[in-house]
Length: 350
Image 1 (spheres, rainbow, N blue to C red):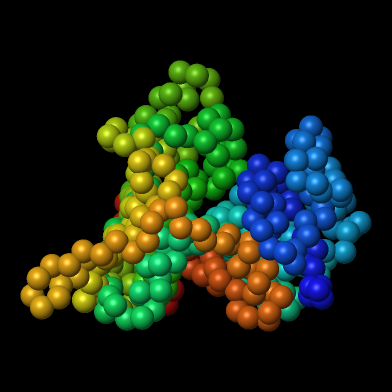
Image 2: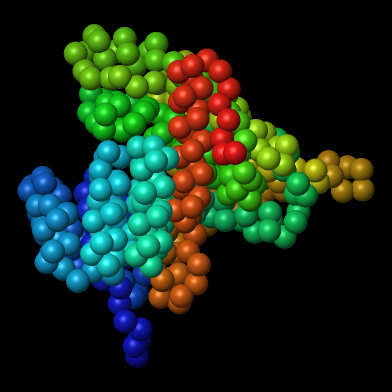
């Protein structure tokens, strides 16, 4: 008989929130008891689909009525900070969608509030939780690669602007375009595999020649970039190139790759068939001969970020993708956007 108390979870925002509900429900000791969304039709549909009885038109109503242990914040980026602070004030741990916030100032406020409340804050950097990523991390931790000194992490779409004309393309709601939407995932994945080295400066550029023209023709709102590229230098001397786009004249419909070069071996995590399954490879040398290793099949199962977070809370262990790492990502993104604006390198930290 399972006597472990169940975590009571609430989910705010039922766009990305649907994936959160599915992830939470993987864990036998988690119960999603409440959801909140201002769209009444979507609220009823998702509540019925996942069997969630507590349905609220606002996060405030949900937090006031329910005794929750954890809250998922899955709204447009503009609302991440205020809803995270509200959930922490209500005594909840928080899993916040990426990016952590609109900027590093907001991210710092969220992290400080979590620490003051004695609660956990995790960011949903979901791409580190795939089977391929986990397999690579196991080898990194075993010392297979030596020291990483250079990497390139990219996510390009030939044409893939989410909700074209909606909040994703509106700077006031999203904070930016594909850099803060897609690049954030590939940045975290590379940093996580590299051991989250301390960034010292960045150089970045942004462009919007394709999406802005399409938006103008269609009468849609679009005031962010459609492609961003950057270069990041770390305190240990390592460097990382980062690229992200919603619109680019490339062969693939969707291209995701993270390559890291180490002193003893290199790695590659990439998507297969222009889709959302992933492969992991290692490239090294044995007795003077090049050796390539395929670490795991793309169909290998891995638990979700929600499962891992629940397990950490229930067992009292450290949780992955903490708010401190989310803040490092925000500092880098802020600096890349500032560099793109000024046309000059931007320092990070002291």
